[in-house]
Amino acid sequence: MDRRPSAQRRVRGARIALAHDWLVSMRGGEQVLDRIARLVIEDHKPAALYTLTDARVPMTEAIDAFEHIRSSLDRVPLARKRLRRWLLPWYPRGVESLRVKLAREHEHEPIDLLVSTSSTAIKALAAPPGVPHLCYCHTPARFLWSQQDQYTKGRGLRARLRRIGLNRHGDRLREWDTQSVRAVDTFLANSEHTRDLIQRVYKRESRLVYPPARTEFFTPAGEERQDSWLLVSALEPYKRADLAIDAAIQSDARLLVVGDGSQAKALRAHARKVQRQVTKARGRAGRVEFMGRVDDEQLRTLYRRARLVVFPQVEDFGIVAVEAQACGTPVVARAEGGALETVLEGRTGVFFEDPSPAALAEAARKCPENVEENCRANAERFSERVFDDTMRAEMARMLR
Image (tube, rainbow, N blue to C red):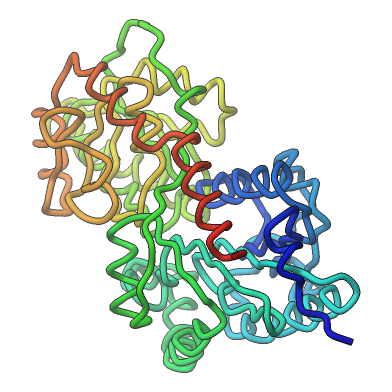
């Protein structure tokens, strides 16, 4: 029996499957997945959502509307939590188990298109013969290609274990990763920075589609600005929260840190240590307040009140920088990666090149003020409406 999708069904009400590395929390990648899921529900017929691990927590209405198909790795104890990062050598096996499940679903009821959103391994999921695979790529895996040093630096047990794991398995996984892109028919890149990485690492062309920022939710409100810095970030090694902490303490600034992650405890201890050192040397020091996770309304209020948002890491795109500008708040950003595409020097923020506390602190002193209109206009370039229109066109092109 021929299970290939008919031409008519490809054009009207196509049956579309989604794939995402893992479903554990709502971050930038999950916001993109949510928007794509909404488009599929509105315009087509949803199939299932395939993922390596699933924490079984509510995500969004659109994501939760899909049946979740989990890989064999999901059966490993604690794989749905932080242990998933330590299962790296078994990612190929997990993806293969999903390929078998996807093939079975296609046999039961044909699928017209597979859309994956990937920053790690799910792009390797091979679609059934005759089914195109469109991959929205946030980045080639950072720990394999672009930021290995950020994942392995440090003296703690976790850092040592990461070094051991990447030294032992890195070459094999890089070989698998480069071969796995044969499963992708078309790459979409979330920034020019990512386009360059995809070309350099995978030797593949890609099309640029910026992620959607919720510019209708994140808006200015005319609230009085407080003399505080704001850092909104997962507290992971490559995010470089330590730079923001050190710069704020040395600048006598108040820094609010929103987010959580594997480095939260270490960063709190680091902040206390640096505060003691600076206070002892100068008699005063900046303050760092860790706020953990906050809801969207709280985050919007913090954006609206901050004097500036600190963006110390190298990001592939970096939705936080756009959300901040949507609220009229300027950004102090590292002069690399996606920030070069989202922040306008001197108009909506300022860059620093040297990844040092002193360079960040100097940039913060030069950060422009009273640029709310500039920030808002710039953020509109990355609105959900722009993303929806572009993504619809890309899916339609794959279904022709």
